[in-house]
Amino acid sequence: MVTVERSLTRTGLDVFLAEGHPELSGRRVGLITNPTGVDRRLRSAADLLHESDMVDLVALFGPEHGVRGAAQAGEKVEATTDPRTGLPVHSLYGDDLHPTSDMLGGLDALIFDIQDVGVRYATYISTMAHAQEAAAAAGLPFVVFDRPNPITGVSVEGNVLDPAFASFVGVHPIPIRHGMTAGELARLFAAEHGWPEPLVVGMQGWR
Image (tube, rainbow, N blue to C red; front, side, top):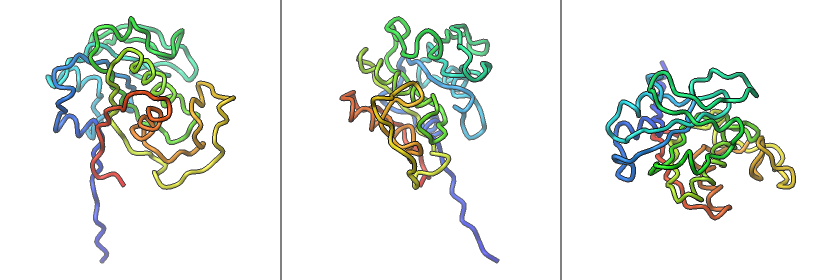
């Protein structure tokens, strides 16, 4: 009989909840997330951080489909109040694709926790890049709770975007299948745009 060794991958969210981070302790934070931002027991990052005393979660930011996934593809996401936490939800898929200075007011840090799909034209990485740019302009630390690339961090395929054709479904000159995690992309964007280095809460067990 063959014995298969199984290893557990812990996402950045799971690592943060288990270990915390001194740069975030007690900070007033905003969270960009959606239904993919869950821990290993499929509990929402929004709910977990709201209940935690490790940070003071004061605002949520909704990408395409919204924080709770209620909006259809391409449907405008409205600013609202989250029914579970009572927190304000700012839309990043409506009139504004970048967080505005009013949205970021009163925050000490901005956190991104969304499971990317591993291809350039998905809008979540575009939302991350816009939020990272806005955080840099506001002097706010930008934090990524990292997650695996579901189509692996090994293969890189497809054409590289011509910057002349950059759009919300292609914000940076990377291949279609980029082979990176959100945290790795955030570091790349920072290096190539001159933004501050993001704080990436890394995974454990990811290869």
